[in-house]
Image 1: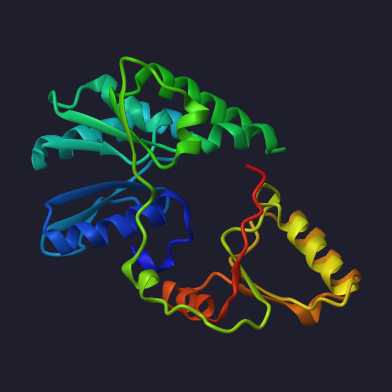
Image 2 (image 1 turned 90 degrees about the vertical axis):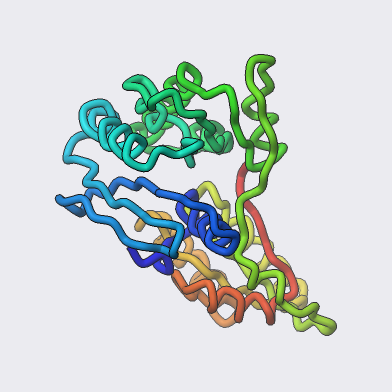
Length: 274
């Protein structure tokens, strides 16, 4: 409910998009599903935007969408009567199409990178879930789609029957107000979740190599670990290589703090395996 607590991903992009919609006065109703609630409720994001929180259900995501969530979406499409139904992600979310959406125009934003992530993920259950989502998405994809990057488009490929465009994820305006830094003091910044896919170990190995060669850089990490075993591996590496004084782990922070730390950084580092 508190959008400031969002920790990246599709939810972060959606929150930023809502901020833009609120400025130009677009009427939007967001339907989101939560496992932690047992009763539907609505909050007003702005005078033209409302967010509906619906209980997801207690079964697997697939069963929840087939037997419950699809009917919640259908209900709100009828009540809100939108010009366009936008799926902020594909996969099982598209199952709602099977039950009918009152012939409303439909659009989906594709995050093609998840298909490649399945090749890296070790957890078999998560890997199978991604592949299942890909199959459902292939069968039920609307004819109008948004790719968030050329990279996503290259992964998914082009189909003659599908109309597409490329629109990068929305970014909060405050990031464009950061002043250009004219001096440098060797400060690196990493922003995002910390797991094997993000390849933070490569960054630490590079930092260690620089230190060994007398080139001292300081790394600030904004984000937190997604798995305890990977956390132990990374913190163990930092300790064994004597890098503690060159690295600061901030954990999850607000966007205001991200901007503050980013203002003093020299290089934004991206080291993902994709």
